[in-house]
Image (cartoon, rainbow, N blue to C red; front, side, top):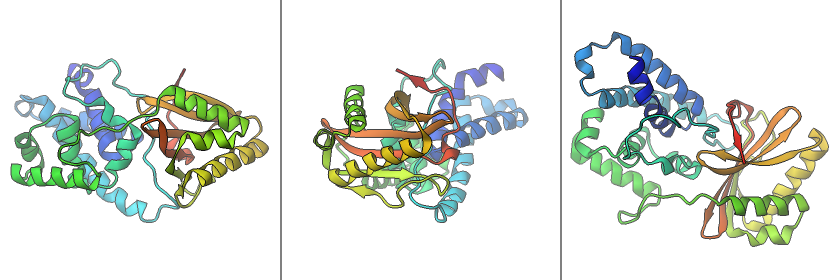
Length: 292
């Protein structure tokens, strides 16, 4: 059992995170699955990867359905929980796994899907399962799974010919943007933003955040400068640092009390297209952040 845990825990954690958008839920799912595994007859584990993925998928599917109801009552915008660290860095994971699909922008896109569409998309695109394997796991036909996958790509704005990819912002771009932010250089900040940039912030009703998305480069810059100024006045000295979150460079604002804000940037070309700001303390509990 221990050997199986070490071999598959990383794969299962990433699968659960992609299906739920929550690192804490993903850890709980993996823990629960391996506890239940003690009661599974050995003959059912002849293909452990498929069986474990099915167990994780079923558990996440139930979580997704209940989570959707909770999010209808969520205060303001809901964003996925950032993945500060991966428990799978030294795991033996099959090469078919798409690590780039852990990017935050991709996790946000997955929120557009129904629980069933999300499962099919992740199993197919992230783990490389063929439709027959997915059909068996989902107890559906292969034809139905193909349709679900096609529908998922359409909802995410990905054409049938297009590779699934989300472009993370390079460290240099984030560094330049934060420097301009600290200097209050509005002109420089605007030059690094796409004119149609969108900023989404999540405070969960427990921390100050914009209730609705903020659009256009000018409004986004004014919002960020205002937030930084108010935070400095209320919280005292703020420390900015670049960190590895969701396997991409991002930024963190700290005070003497701990993490104040996590910001994740999505770029298209050389311009910033999306900024995701997480301030809900419930989503900032994970430690182990690696800074540059």
